[in-house]
Picture 1 (cartoon, helix red, strand yellow):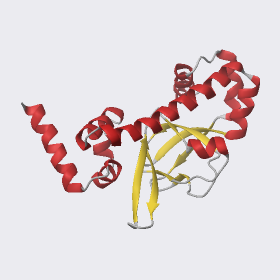
Picture 2 (picture 1 turned 30 degrees about the vertical axis):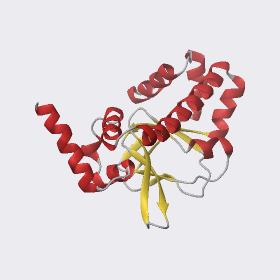
Picture 3 (picture 1 turned 120 degrees about the vertical axis):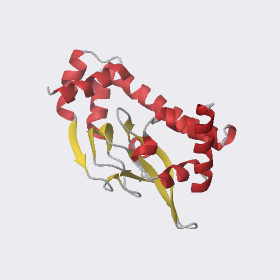
Length: 199
């Protein structure tokens, strides 16, 4: 295995209780892919067939609002995070969103069929599937609760905790879209946070 493969499989071990045989048996199913900035991991109205693990880059999940005629960012995924439209992946129904690379990116991925084969033949991969479902349930519910209970500034701070260098990596208007605010509002939030650091 290459060093990069070692890192990927170590991340899988850290995520779920996978032993040497679990990892070894799964290796033929994991593939590496590089895509350019602006290319898609998955398209709207297509079934999401792959679960990805980001090695390098950042992805956004977004939908196109036909009324406002603009994109609405919902999630970001960056290094060492799984990228997938999870509802589409497990239900085999078309995805409601686009998943786009915001930088030249690289990821490892496994197909739905191959992952389910591992679930059926390896108990620890079955545990991986349960933990994966719990992870994406938590991501979705947290996103909903943030809009109910948190201010724009608190949501911005939480975004930075999740993706510390995101503001340097993608245009600010993508972050504004994610937060549900305008660019001037985001600028004011950033200035307030910076002034607090100075004090």
